[in-house]
Image (cartoon, rainbow, N blue to C red):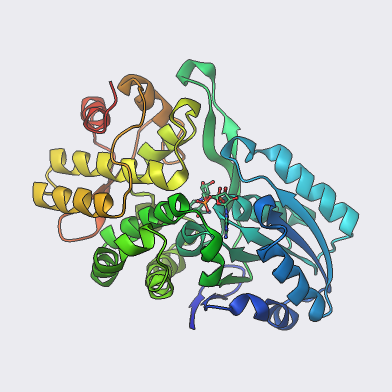
Length: 370
Ligand SMILES: NC(=O)c1ccc[n+]([C@@H]2O[C@H](COP(=O)([O-])OP(=O)(O)OC[C@H]3O[C@@H](n4cnc5c(N)ncnc54)[C@H](O)[C@@H]3O)[C@@H](O)[C@H]2O)c1
Protein backbone atom coordinates (compact mmCIF):
# COMPACT_ATOMS: atom_id res chain seq x y z
CA UNK A 1 0.00 0.00 0.00
CA UNK A 2 1.27 3.48 -0.88
CA UNK A 3 -0.13 6.65 0.64
CA UNK A 4 0.93 10.08 -0.56
CA UNK A 5 -0.28 13.31 0.94
CA UNK A 6 -0.92 16.22 -1.40
CA UNK A 7 -0.96 19.77 -0.09
CA UNK A 8 -3.95 21.72 -1.40
CA UNK A 9 -5.74 24.99 -0.75
CA UNK A 10 -8.82 23.24 0.71
CA UNK A 11 -6.60 21.09 2.94
CA UNK A 12 -4.12 18.30 2.34
CA UNK A 13 -5.54 15.03 1.08
CA UNK A 14 -4.28 11.47 0.78
CA UNK A 15 -3.87 9.50 -2.41
CA UNK A 16 -3.98 5.81 -1.47
CA UNK A 17 -2.85 3.15 -3.94
CA UNK A 18 -3.55 -0.35 -2.65
CA UNK A 19 -4.90 -3.58 -4.08
CA UNK A 20 -8.21 -4.44 -2.44
CA UNK A 21 -8.52 -0.97 -0.87
CA UNK A 22 -12.01 -0.43 -2.25
CA UNK A 23 -13.45 -2.34 0.71
CA UNK A 24 -11.92 0.17 3.12
CA UNK A 25 -13.58 3.19 1.54
CA UNK A 26 -16.53 3.29 3.94
CA UNK A 27 -14.31 3.37 7.02
CA UNK A 28 -12.04 6.01 5.50
CA UNK A 29 -15.01 8.20 4.58
CA UNK A 30 -16.47 7.85 8.07
CA UNK A 31 -13.35 9.43 9.54
CA UNK A 32 -13.09 12.13 6.86
CA UNK A 33 -16.59 13.38 6.13
CA UNK A 34 -18.76 15.58 8.30
CA UNK A 35 -22.16 14.47 6.93
CA UNK A 36 -23.84 11.07 6.64
CA UNK A 37 -25.20 11.37 3.10
CA UNK A 38 -23.25 10.59 -0.03
CA UNK A 39 -24.17 10.72 -3.68
CA UNK A 40 -22.36 8.07 -5.65
CA UNK A 41 -21.69 9.29 -9.19
CA UNK A 42 -20.72 6.18 -11.11
CA UNK A 43 -19.66 5.34 -14.64
CA UNK A 44 -22.71 3.45 -15.91
CA UNK A 45 -20.51 0.58 -17.11
CA UNK A 46 -19.61 -0.09 -13.47
CA UNK A 47 -22.99 -0.01 -11.74
CA UNK A 48 -23.09 -3.81 -11.43
CA UNK A 49 -19.43 -4.16 -10.38
CA UNK A 50 -17.10 -1.66 -8.70
CA UNK A 51 -19.84 0.89 -7.96
CA UNK A 52 -21.80 -1.84 -6.19
CA UNK A 53 -18.79 -2.63 -3.97
CA UNK A 54 -18.35 1.07 -3.18
CA UNK A 55 -22.03 1.50 -2.30
CA UNK A 56 -21.91 -1.50 0.00
CA UNK A 57 -18.77 -0.43 1.92
CA UNK A 58 -20.32 3.03 2.38
CA UNK A 59 -23.60 1.53 3.65
CA UNK A 60 -21.68 -0.73 6.03
CA UNK A 61 -20.12 2.45 7.44
CA UNK A 62 -23.66 3.81 8.02
CA UNK A 63 -23.80 6.28 5.15
CA UNK A 64 -27.09 7.03 3.45
CA UNK A 65 -26.14 6.34 -0.17
CA UNK A 66 -27.93 7.64 -3.27
CA UNK A 67 -26.65 6.92 -6.76
CA UNK A 68 -26.65 8.37 -10.25
CA UNK A 69 -24.73 7.22 -13.28
CA UNK A 70 -22.91 8.77 -16.22
CA UNK A 71 -22.22 7.36 -19.68
CA UNK A 72 -18.49 7.83 -20.23
CA UNK A 73 -18.46 9.37 -23.71
CA UNK A 74 -16.62 12.62 -24.48
CA UNK A 75 -19.60 13.92 -26.50
CA UNK A 76 -21.71 13.60 -23.36
CA UNK A 77 -19.18 15.32 -21.07
CA UNK A 78 -21.19 18.52 -21.12
CA UNK A 79 -22.92 20.85 -18.70
CA UNK A 80 -26.20 18.87 -19.17
CA UNK A 81 -24.61 15.88 -17.44
CA UNK A 82 -23.53 18.09 -14.55
CA UNK A 83 -27.12 19.38 -14.33
CA UNK A 84 -28.30 15.76 -14.02
CA UNK A 85 -25.94 15.28 -11.09
CA UNK A 86 -27.30 18.48 -9.48
CA UNK A 87 -30.81 17.00 -9.86
CA UNK A 88 -29.66 13.82 -8.15
CA UNK A 89 -28.04 15.89 -5.38
CA UNK A 90 -31.32 17.71 -4.88
CA UNK A 91 -33.30 14.45 -4.74
CA UNK A 92 -30.78 13.01 -2.28
CA UNK A 93 -31.02 16.10 -0.08
CA UNK A 94 -27.24 16.64 -0.13
CA UNK A 95 -26.28 19.33 2.34
CA UNK A 96 -23.08 21.32 2.87
CA UNK A 97 -21.46 18.58 5.00
CA UNK A 98 -22.35 15.77 2.62
CA UNK A 99 -20.22 14.50 -0.25
CA UNK A 100 -20.08 13.18 -3.77
CA UNK A 101 -18.12 9.97 -4.42
CA UNK A 102 -16.96 9.57 -8.03
CA UNK A 103 -16.43 5.98 -9.24
CA UNK A 104 -15.09 5.69 -12.77
CA UNK A 105 -12.50 7.00 -15.17
CA UNK A 106 -11.32 10.54 -15.71
CA UNK A 107 -14.53 11.54 -17.40
CA UNK A 108 -16.70 10.55 -14.44
CA UNK A 109 -14.23 12.15 -12.02
CA UNK A 110 -14.16 15.43 -13.95
CA UNK A 111 -17.96 15.67 -14.14
CA UNK A 112 -18.58 14.55 -10.55
CA UNK A 113 -15.83 16.87 -9.32
CA UNK A 114 -17.35 19.84 -11.15
CA UNK A 115 -20.80 19.00 -9.76
CA UNK A 116 -19.27 18.89 -6.25
CA UNK A 117 -17.46 22.19 -6.83
CA UNK A 118 -20.72 23.90 -7.76
CA UNK A 119 -23.36 22.17 -5.59
CA UNK A 120 -24.21 24.56 -2.72
CA UNK A 121 -21.07 26.45 -3.85
CA UNK A 122 -18.89 23.45 -3.09
CA UNK A 123 -19.11 20.17 -1.18
CA UNK A 124 -16.52 17.45 -0.60
CA UNK A 125 -15.66 15.00 -3.35
CA UNK A 126 -13.93 11.64 -3.01
CA UNK A 127 -12.31 10.27 -6.15
CA UNK A 128 -12.30 6.51 -6.73
CA UNK A 129 -10.54 6.18 -10.11
CA UNK A 130 -11.10 2.91 -11.99
CA UNK A 131 -8.99 3.49 -15.12
CA UNK A 132 -5.20 3.56 -15.22
CA UNK A 133 -5.39 7.06 -16.71
CA UNK A 134 -7.55 8.38 -13.90
CA UNK A 135 -5.40 6.70 -11.22
CA UNK A 136 -2.13 8.22 -12.41
CA UNK A 137 -3.45 11.56 -13.56
CA UNK A 138 -7.08 12.76 -13.70
CA UNK A 139 -8.11 11.98 -10.10
CA UNK A 140 -5.21 13.91 -8.57
CA UNK A 141 -4.85 17.68 -8.51
CA UNK A 142 -8.43 18.94 -8.41
CA UNK A 143 -9.01 19.88 -12.04
CA UNK A 144 -12.68 19.32 -12.85
CA UNK A 145 -14.78 20.33 -15.83
CA UNK A 146 -16.75 19.66 -18.99
CA UNK A 147 -16.42 20.14 -22.75
CA UNK A 148 -18.01 23.01 -24.68
CA UNK A 149 -19.13 22.78 -28.36
CA UNK A 150 -16.76 24.39 -30.88
CA UNK A 151 -17.89 26.37 -33.95
CA UNK A 152 -18.40 24.53 -37.28
CA UNK A 153 -15.72 26.81 -38.72
CA UNK A 154 -13.00 24.67 -37.12
CA UNK A 155 -14.62 21.31 -37.81
CA UNK A 156 -17.10 21.34 -34.93
CA UNK A 157 -16.79 18.81 -32.12
CA UNK A 158 -15.91 19.81 -28.61
CA UNK A 159 -13.58 22.25 -26.88
CA UNK A 160 -11.97 20.10 -24.22
CA UNK A 161 -12.62 20.98 -20.58
CA UNK A 162 -13.24 24.65 -21.38
CA UNK A 163 -15.64 25.09 -18.44
CA UNK A 164 -14.62 23.89 -15.00
CA UNK A 165 -13.13 24.60 -11.60
CA UNK A 166 -10.15 23.72 -9.46
CA UNK A 167 -11.70 21.61 -6.71
CA UNK A 168 -9.28 19.35 -4.83
CA UNK A 169 -10.73 16.07 -3.54
CA UNK A 170 -10.93 15.03 0.11
CA UNK A 171 -9.40 11.63 -0.72
CA UNK A 172 -8.27 9.65 -3.76
CA UNK A 173 -8.49 5.88 -3.45
CA UNK A 174 -6.97 3.88 -6.31
CA UNK A 175 -7.45 0.13 -6.15
CA UNK A 176 -5.45 -1.53 -8.97
CA UNK A 177 -7.73 -4.60 -8.74
CA UNK A 178 -10.46 -2.55 -10.43
CA UNK A 179 -8.28 -2.50 -13.57
CA UNK A 180 -8.88 -6.22 -14.11
CA UNK A 181 -12.10 -5.34 -15.97
CA UNK A 182 -10.59 -2.47 -17.99
CA UNK A 183 -10.17 -3.08 -21.76
CA UNK A 184 -6.55 -3.20 -22.95
CA UNK A 185 -7.14 -0.14 -25.16
CA UNK A 186 -7.87 1.86 -21.98
CA UNK A 187 -4.82 0.42 -20.18
CA UNK A 188 -2.70 1.72 -23.05
CA UNK A 189 -4.37 5.14 -22.76
CA UNK A 190 -3.24 5.28 -19.12
CA UNK A 191 0.29 4.39 -20.17
CA UNK A 192 0.32 7.49 -22.42
CA UNK A 193 -0.05 9.76 -19.37
CA UNK A 194 2.65 7.71 -17.57
CA UNK A 195 5.01 8.30 -20.52
CA UNK A 196 4.24 12.02 -20.25
CA UNK A 197 5.01 12.02 -16.51
CA UNK A 198 8.27 10.15 -17.16
CA UNK A 199 9.32 12.58 -19.91
CA UNK A 200 9.04 15.37 -17.37
CA UNK A 201 12.17 13.96 -15.76
CA UNK A 202 11.38 10.85 -13.71
CA UNK A 203 13.99 8.30 -14.68
CA UNK A 204 12.62 5.60 -12.35
CA UNK A 205 9.22 5.83 -14.00
CA UNK A 206 10.85 5.77 -17.46
CA UNK A 207 12.74 2.58 -16.59
CA UNK A 208 9.58 0.99 -15.16
CA UNK A 209 7.70 1.83 -18.34
CA UNK A 210 10.41 0.31 -20.50
CA UNK A 211 10.48 -2.91 -18.47
CA UNK A 212 6.84 -3.41 -17.42
CA UNK A 213 4.91 -1.17 -19.85
CA UNK A 214 4.63 -3.70 -22.72
CA UNK A 215 3.13 -6.36 -20.42
CA UNK A 216 0.65 -3.90 -18.90
CA UNK A 217 -0.32 -2.78 -22.42
CA UNK A 218 -1.27 -6.41 -23.12
CA UNK A 219 -3.34 -6.78 -19.97
CA UNK A 220 -0.79 -8.27 -17.56
CA UNK A 221 -1.29 -6.26 -14.37
CA UNK A 222 1.35 -7.94 -12.20
CA UNK A 223 3.44 -4.78 -11.95
CA UNK A 224 0.66 -2.22 -12.33
CA UNK A 225 0.50 -1.20 -8.64
CA UNK A 226 4.16 -0.14 -8.46
CA UNK A 227 3.94 1.73 -11.77
CA UNK A 228 0.81 3.55 -10.54
CA UNK A 229 2.47 4.49 -7.24
CA UNK A 230 5.50 5.94 -9.06
CA UNK A 231 3.37 7.88 -11.57
CA UNK A 232 1.11 9.19 -8.79
CA UNK A 233 4.21 10.49 -7.00
CA UNK A 234 5.17 12.56 -10.05
CA UNK A 235 1.71 14.07 -10.44
CA UNK A 236 1.31 14.69 -6.69
CA UNK A 237 4.66 16.50 -6.52
CA UNK A 238 3.78 18.83 -9.38
CA UNK A 239 0.26 19.73 -8.29
CA UNK A 240 1.30 20.32 -4.69
CA UNK A 241 3.77 22.95 -5.92
CA UNK A 242 1.34 24.74 -8.23
CA UNK A 243 -2.31 23.84 -7.63
CA UNK A 244 -3.83 26.45 -9.93
CA UNK A 245 -1.44 25.97 -12.84
CA UNK A 246 0.24 29.34 -12.60
CA UNK A 247 3.64 27.90 -13.53
CA UNK A 248 5.22 24.46 -13.20
CA UNK A 249 1.90 22.53 -13.39
CA UNK A 250 1.54 23.76 -16.95
CA UNK A 251 4.31 21.30 -17.87
CA UNK A 252 1.83 18.46 -17.23
CA UNK A 253 0.10 19.68 -20.39
CA UNK A 254 2.99 18.27 -22.45
CA UNK A 255 1.41 16.98 -25.67
CA UNK A 256 -2.07 18.11 -24.60
CA UNK A 257 -2.42 21.25 -26.75
CA UNK A 258 -1.98 18.99 -29.76
CA UNK A 259 -4.08 16.21 -28.19
CA UNK A 260 -7.07 18.43 -27.44
CA UNK A 261 -7.20 19.59 -31.08
CA UNK A 262 -7.70 16.01 -32.29
CA UNK A 263 -9.50 14.36 -29.38
CA UNK A 264 -12.77 16.21 -29.81
CA UNK A 265 -12.77 15.72 -33.60
CA UNK A 266 -15.48 13.13 -34.20
CA UNK A 267 -14.08 11.57 -37.41
CA UNK A 268 -10.80 10.56 -35.74
CA UNK A 269 -12.42 8.59 -32.88
CA UNK A 270 -9.43 8.93 -30.57
CA UNK A 271 -9.56 8.23 -26.85
CA UNK A 272 -7.86 10.73 -24.56
CA UNK A 273 -4.67 8.73 -24.00
CA UNK A 274 -4.32 7.96 -27.71
CA UNK A 275 -4.63 11.66 -28.55
CA UNK A 276 -2.02 12.38 -25.86
CA UNK A 277 0.35 9.83 -27.41
CA UNK A 278 0.12 11.51 -30.84
CA UNK A 279 0.36 14.90 -29.11
CA UNK A 280 3.58 13.86 -27.34
CA UNK A 281 5.15 12.94 -30.68
CA UNK A 282 4.04 16.24 -32.25
CA UNK A 283 5.42 18.22 -29.29
CA UNK A 284 8.66 16.24 -29.55
CA UNK A 285 8.97 17.21 -33.23
CA UNK A 286 8.57 20.87 -32.20
CA UNK A 287 11.31 20.26 -29.60
CA UNK A 288 13.63 18.87 -32.27
CA UNK A 289 12.96 21.91 -34.52
CA UNK A 290 13.68 24.29 -31.63
CA UNK A 291 16.77 22.36 -30.51
CA UNK A 292 15.54 21.50 -27.00
CA UNK A 293 15.00 17.77 -27.81
CA UNK A 294 17.47 15.73 -29.83
CA UNK A 295 16.76 13.13 -32.50
CA UNK A 296 17.95 10.27 -30.24
CA UNK A 297 15.41 11.31 -27.58
CA UNK A 298 12.67 11.45 -30.23
CA UNK A 299 13.61 7.94 -31.33
CA UNK A 300 13.60 6.67 -27.72
CA UNK A 301 10.14 8.19 -27.25
CA UNK A 302 8.66 6.64 -30.39
CA UNK A 303 10.23 3.28 -29.57
CA UNK A 304 8.61 3.32 -26.09
CA UNK A 305 5.22 4.39 -27.46
CA UNK A 306 5.48 1.62 -30.06
CA UNK A 307 6.39 -0.95 -27.39
CA UNK A 308 3.23 -0.09 -25.42
CA UNK A 309 1.14 -0.12 -28.62
CA UNK A 310 0.15 3.54 -28.60
CA UNK A 311 -0.58 5.43 -31.83
CA UNK A 312 1.93 7.96 -33.13
CA UNK A 313 0.03 9.10 -36.22
CA UNK A 314 -3.48 10.36 -36.92
CA UNK A 315 -5.80 7.47 -37.76
CA UNK A 316 -7.61 9.47 -40.47
CA UNK A 317 -7.34 12.57 -42.63
CA UNK A 318 -7.18 16.01 -41.04
CA UNK A 319 -5.85 19.26 -42.56
CA UNK A 320 -2.95 20.69 -40.52
CA UNK A 321 -4.30 24.23 -40.96
CA UNK A 322 -7.63 23.28 -39.38
CA UNK A 323 -5.90 21.56 -36.46
CA UNK A 324 -3.80 24.69 -35.90
CA UNK A 325 -7.03 26.73 -35.84
CA UNK A 326 -8.51 24.35 -33.23
CA UNK A 327 -5.47 24.90 -31.01
CA UNK A 328 -6.61 28.51 -30.56
CA UNK A 329 -9.33 27.17 -28.27
CA UNK A 330 -6.78 25.71 -25.88
CA UNK A 331 -6.90 27.03 -22.31
CA UNK A 332 -3.22 27.96 -22.46
CA UNK A 333 -3.74 30.55 -25.20
CA UNK A 334 -3.06 33.97 -23.67
CA UNK A 335 -3.96 37.13 -25.60
CA UNK A 336 -4.15 35.05 -28.77
CA UNK A 337 -0.63 33.61 -28.31
CA UNK A 338 -0.25 29.85 -28.36
CA UNK A 339 1.88 28.48 -25.54
CA UNK A 340 3.33 25.05 -26.15
CA UNK A 341 4.99 22.70 -23.70
CA UNK A 342 8.07 21.30 -25.41
CA UNK A 343 10.21 18.40 -24.09
CA UNK A 344 13.92 18.68 -23.30
CA UNK A 345 16.69 16.17 -23.85
CA UNK A 346 17.56 14.41 -20.59
CA UNK A 347 14.12 15.00 -19.06
CA UNK A 348 11.93 18.00 -18.29
CA UNK A 349 10.09 20.43 -20.52
CA UNK A 350 9.80 24.14 -21.20
CA UNK A 351 6.92 26.43 -22.07
CA UNK A 352 7.46 28.26 -25.36
CA UNK A 353 5.34 31.06 -26.76
CA UNK A 354 7.61 31.68 -29.75
CA UNK A 355 6.75 28.63 -31.87
CA UNK A 356 5.85 29.82 -35.37
CA UNK A 357 2.68 28.70 -37.13
CA UNK A 358 4.86 27.05 -39.75
CA UNK A 359 6.65 24.98 -37.07
CA UNK A 360 3.31 23.88 -35.60
CA UNK A 361 2.01 22.97 -39.07
CA UNK A 362 5.20 20.97 -39.70
CA UNK A 363 4.73 19.10 -36.43
CA UNK A 364 1.14 18.25 -37.43
CA UNK A 365 2.41 16.95 -40.78
CA UNK A 366 5.00 14.79 -38.97
CA UNK A 367 2.10 12.94 -37.29
CA UNK A 368 0.16 12.49 -40.52
CA UNK A 369 -1.91 15.65 -41.02
CA UNK A 370 -2.28 16.87 -44.61
N1 LIG B 1 -8.80 16.39 -14.36
C1 LIG B 1 -7.62 16.11 -14.87
O1 LIG B 1 -6.57 16.52 -14.38
C2 LIG B 1 -7.56 15.21 -16.08
C3 LIG B 1 -6.32 14.69 -16.51
C4 LIG B 1 -6.32 13.81 -17.59
C5 LIG B 1 -7.50 13.49 -18.25
N2 LIG B 1 -8.68 14.05 -17.82
C6 LIG B 1 -9.95 13.70 -18.48
O2 LIG B 1 -10.19 12.33 -18.25
C7 LIG B 1 -10.95 11.80 -19.34
C8 LIG B 1 -10.29 10.53 -19.80
O3 LIG B 1 -10.27 9.63 -18.72
P1 LIG B 1 -10.28 8.06 -18.95
O4 LIG B 1 -9.25 7.69 -19.93
O5 LIG B 1 -10.27 7.45 -17.61
O6 LIG B 1 -11.64 7.81 -19.74
P2 LIG B 1 -13.14 7.46 -19.33
O7 LIG B 1 -13.52 7.96 -18.02
O8 LIG B 1 -13.94 7.88 -20.51
O9 LIG B 1 -13.11 5.85 -19.28
C9 LIG B 1 -12.70 5.13 -20.42
C10 LIG B 1 -13.59 3.90 -20.64
O10 LIG B 1 -13.34 2.93 -19.64
C11 LIG B 1 -14.56 2.47 -19.04
N3 LIG B 1 -14.20 2.08 -17.67
C12 LIG B 1 -13.82 2.87 -16.64
N4 LIG B 1 -13.38 2.11 -15.62
C13 LIG B 1 -13.53 0.82 -15.99
C14 LIG B 1 -13.24 -0.43 -15.37
N5 LIG B 1 -12.63 -0.52 -14.20
N6 LIG B 1 -13.57 -1.55 -16.04
C15 LIG B 1 -14.14 -1.49 -17.30
N7 LIG B 1 -14.39 -0.36 -17.94
C16 LIG B 1 -14.08 0.79 -17.30
C17 LIG B 1 -15.49 3.65 -19.21
O11 LIG B 1 -16.85 3.23 -19.18
C18 LIG B 1 -15.08 4.17 -20.58
O12 LIG B 1 -15.71 3.42 -21.59
C19 LIG B 1 -11.01 12.87 -20.39
O13 LIG B 1 -12.27 13.47 -20.37
C20 LIG B 1 -9.93 13.85 -19.97
O14 LIG B 1 -10.22 15.17 -20.38
C21 LIG B 1 -8.72 14.88 -16.76
